Image (cartoon, rainbow, N blue to C red):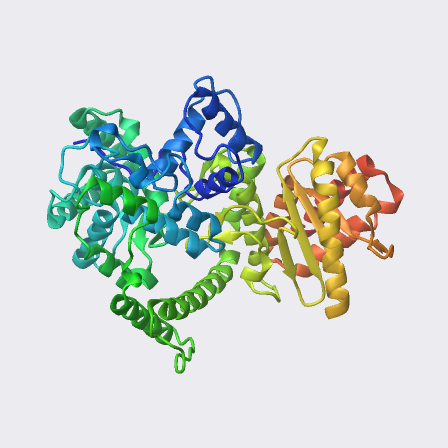
Length: 570
């Protein structure tokens, strides 16, 4: 059996595909991506936009693989095989952005982006005119996996599908296999793993056995499962559960409706058309949309969240979608507030993520046995995210957790890209003061050019805002792995002139992530995770600015932090 996978094993982070599409949409390369020179040009375009690392790529495979990924998911018109008997003009111009591709580009919320990936993966069938290498009946891998998870839920009371179960069972099955037989195999693997004295050794032995049985390198099973999990999560229908996935409760009725569509494309032409336009979803049908809406209203009621639907029109699917999206946003905000309340208990995990940012390592195993990961390509986003979690853990914010961050998160509260420009990364409002946090992985002389002006402007804007709103003082906290002295000097002087040439004195403190991590850990170690202690530290560091130039000020900031840590611990 040949294992299958959703998406693309090269572009493991689905939301980066949107970044690539956005870059391509403003480029003359759109529609001209074939041949070595054009693959080099696409690779360069992606590098210039910070989407990929340029590095050494003598085969120019990055450009080719990105094009292939966008073709396969129907975000770019794929090249129609000559053997299909279909004219390219019937489908669309090769490598131009498709309707679903433009929908993804224009999506400005995570749910809207997830719907684009859902339409893409719901339109994806194998074998197909693009992938003929499989020797089983045509089926939808997305619906198949969701159906397996529903059957798991029916038999065990829980929809959870573990990583090793995807790797060694699900992605080696198709519609030719009965759901009950697939679940029997999953539960057998699960019970044998639970009985094993060493789960890692068990996993390795099982992968080696699968490699021998199916004729693949053992690592392929993990690579495909990792890709499948990432693209499944990009639909918004599943969420992390330990080292596995479970169905999102708010999406349960939608999923049940989705898997009822067991039809297959009636021709290669209809497959291409649906792929490029995106699949029809249950909520595109009024009756199904109403059923999904009724379930969402029931969930609000169960959780005691008030919602008034009287007077809201439900005549069309568009009317229903407006209400549905509003309810989903309300549920999402409540889920995020509950997540924020749990952060104080997760401070050691938060510190571990900081360590990965500091060391530039990808993974770390916690004392609990759980493994955490910072994907290399997403390190800037995770840097913002871990600082957001750190201040949520301090747990005395006046503003809501979703008001404190400017980056987007998914259903697992993980970052989807970095905060957009024209504003700070993070804004934390407390009872008596505000901290504006800016982070960067840039650690050389370019740091001042990239961060000096924007950080001061963002802090100045917030100073003006809070001066008129509440009079709360605003502190800037700039965090990097290494603080360049030119950056520190810019913040030490801390001057900003408004458009009317009024002079503002800004309070921005540059701190390394290493020292912030040490202070953060000390607060929780002694059980004094108090916002006022953070403010006291910033005041102490600020008071040193007039006596020293940047190199000495940086050293004094570091020694002050260490003194405060020592005072806390003793």
